[in-house]
Amino acid sequence: MVMVENKGKRRKIQRFFVTIGIMESFYQTYCLLNFPIHSQIIGHHVYYALDDIPALKFISAAFYVSATIVAPFFTSIKECG
Image (cartoon, rainbow, N blue to C red):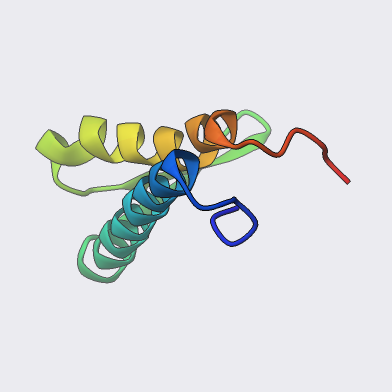
């Protein structure tokens, strides 16, 4: 979205969200490589538990939501397709 956005305030906002997304992806990669992952079957679903840093779970979730859900609300492009 950053590449198609016109220059200006919205482009700077999109760059901010891209930066947040990159930071989140690096953190998730770090966690996958350095912490154990447990999987179990609960009902008809497979549950994956990652034993990462408890203090950063809220921040990680906020970064993920802002990069994936909130970012599209700050674009000037309204069409899908």
